[in-house]
Amino acid sequence: MKQYFMMLAAYNQWANERIYEAASALDEEQFARDTGAFFKSMRGTLNHLLVADRIWMKRFTGEGDAPAALDTIVHADFDRLRVARKAEDQRIVEWIGSLSDAAFAGRFTYMTVTDMRTISQRLAPALVHLFNHQTHHRGQAHMILTVLGRESVGLDLIQFQRTEDGRAFA
Image 1 (tube, rainbow, N blue to C red):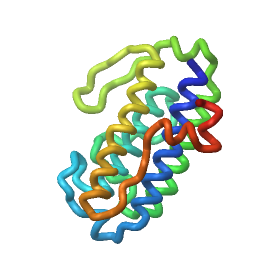
Image 2: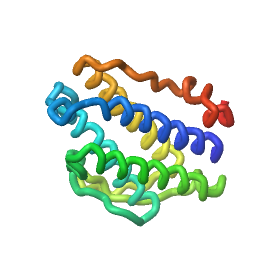
Image 3: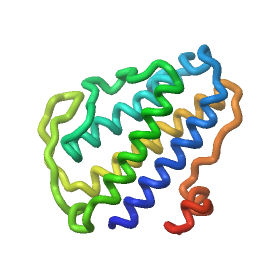
Image 4: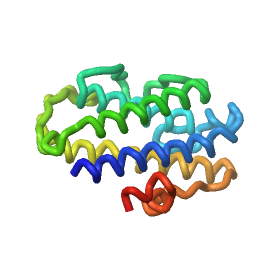
């Protein structure tokens, strides 16, 4: 299990770097433009991904900031958002690496953001959700790039596994 989640954490970091590199070519107006995505703009989408990761990591570890709303804009400025994203991705990679194999079968309890319910579940399925959620919204970021006339970016897991960093997981 640990190797599987280490792969997902490394892939997540790689894919986020690719999306941010592509988004860095957007000007301020394009970054903020409502393109019809769920969180409207690239700014809203990338902030949501950071918000959600911070919420989940607070649930998992008991540490860090956890915004109270899923549409919180942590950083309106792209460069500051990118720095925060890199730090959060590194935090996720290091935390996954610190877990024992047995930890993935363990349970944790948390309060939901949207309807304030207490949930208790196993860690492994929640981690699958964390990484799947990232993939879902990176797909929306991919769509935003396309709508804005930018080149799309390949984000497939197999592409990551064919990189130098990803080969260890292939």
